[in-house]
Length: 135
Image 1 (tube, rainbow, N blue to C red):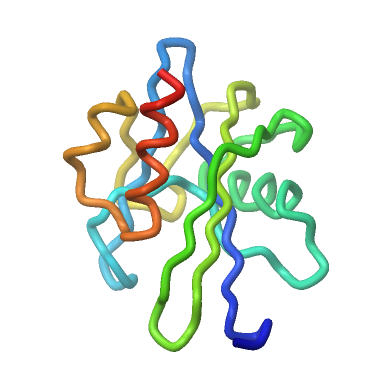
Image 2 (cartoon, rainbow, N blue to C red; image 1 turned 135 degrees about the vertical axis):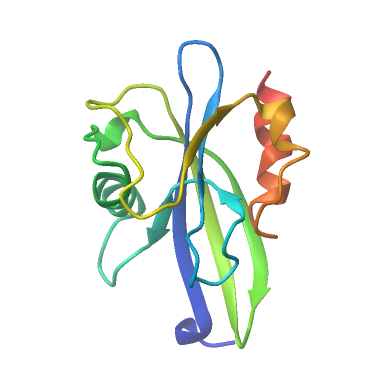
């Protein structure tokens, strides 16, 4: 596999003061429409993962954050069509602004245990257990 076959993606588990995590629902017309996922997106060439995630969260949710507040939690590795997805999950407990669904159908705050029963993309599913284990 060459580097061009690798899709590098970052995502965040925004955690509120009650321990709930923010998920967004993929919109109609997109691959895996209707599934619930951690907000985030692709890392652009030359971009650091934390900077990419800060950019993506601003675009998707309208929030601002200090990238130093991102804490690496887990990663997932999944085949995706003819490519391979490497998803880096960070936790985030402090941000500015109220998250809003700019590119998603809906947002939902759920406990890590509630995520176990939700329809999620294959790469997100193993990351749920990392959050449940943090309890």
